[in-house]
Image (cartoon, rainbow, N blue to C red):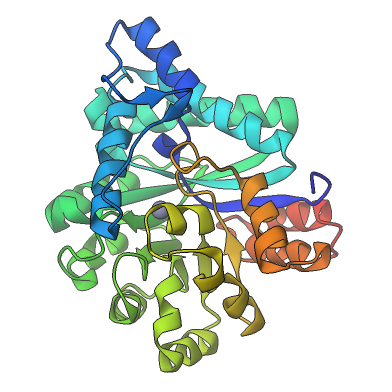
Length: 331
Ligand SMILES: [Zn+2]
């Protein structure tokens, strides 16, 4: 498994913070660890078994973990730690979703946050060769005004590693059209948005038609509509599939009901992501392993998943050629 080059197209930076890192940062920043956050070395969030309950519990844990962060060095360390662990599993490229809103909570301006994250990317690349790009993302439930501010910051403080604009957060808040100004003002050529995870097929259609995305965070609930699946195939849609996340948050109850295999067999350009790996007890290596063990993906099919991801990665042509070469593919 380690020899298969892997690509992680969907991962939130703060979701990669490990329980060990929480302890380290809490000690360094002299901030107490929220009681009950970590048990037996794991984040101990537990909801009531419903999708809403699990999401609420997860978000509380996520906020608890990030509450120990204080400054730029923390962002650098978290980024490096995540990329190093990913590279150790054979990951050659990761696209990390970053949030100006979270940076502000830690007390950093957007350019300070990006600089700190980029330092972590550089250190990991120098040591392991792993390539990384950043998706500046707005948070849907913080509202269109807040999103517009993130779009403006992204535009006003460009960085070579920030190549895309994205949208995360509650899929049921507002409408995608409310966020079009934020995407447009960012000025970035690449875009992706969460859709079809907490909300159903209509959320995917709305995001696709108004924000003109071909890549979608999750998109898994497209399985509820055969007509939508056809439309998505027609635009060569790219689902960023995060199986462990979907199961942990009860979007699907088990592997058997998860549409990963159906998406792949339908010819959709399936890619994999670890989403919030530390909270879902996973990693990009584990997601590839799950695809093999529970969805019957052959080594060749997993290589195809990596190729899909590189072809749809938010990078320039030269980087894409280099990444394809690392997959053993001629561009
Ligand atoms: Zn996500």
